[in-house]
Length: 72
Image 1 (cartoon, one colour):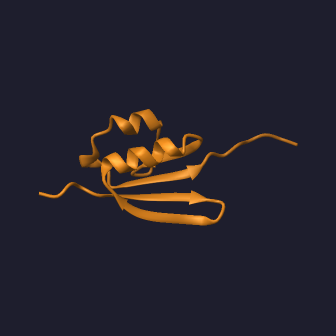
Image 2 (cartoon, rainbow, N blue to C red):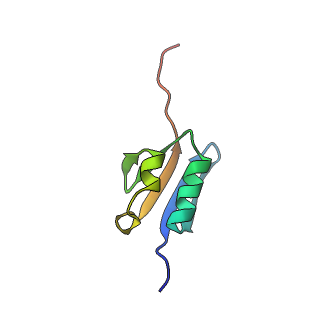
């Protein structure tokens, strides 16, 4: 039996990258992008929450740059 793959989308200044990764690989990519916002199935999650998640219910992980608000 093969391990489940998760679609991981990583957005950055140059566009975005999509990959099919194992849950362990997805968690590793999230850890490498510590300042980013992480969405699991369109729900904002904390990176450590994803590390402990049940990937049976997660099909897509999106990693996007965090938004910063404020005035000039």
